[in-house]
Image 1 (tube, rainbow, N blue to C red):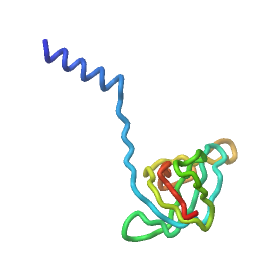
Image 2: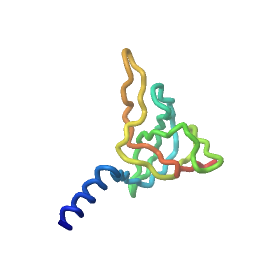
Image 3: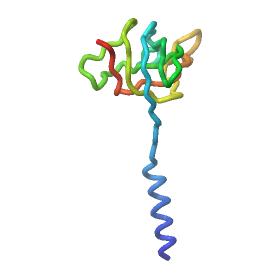
Image 4: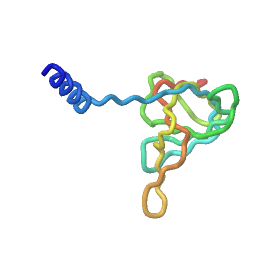
Length: 117
């Protein structure tokens, strides 16, 4: 009886309160170009060099248009960005022909991002 009760409590806890986890990784880079997303509240930013680890490369990240945690967050071309991002999120959607389509990015910047200004 105890096993059935414990099993049902665990089952209903998992169903009623699912746990979502998003891995965050650090990044740093120089913003070269940015483009406002037309179907979502994000800005597509191309960063080069983009540092995720020991080797730099180039890539795009989506930055939310909502306020960041830092008071003076300004991101535009020629500023350096440093913070965390969620890999694999395709948040920037652009209008084309008959609907909205995702503009490929490496990930989504989190509110823990700052700039060189």
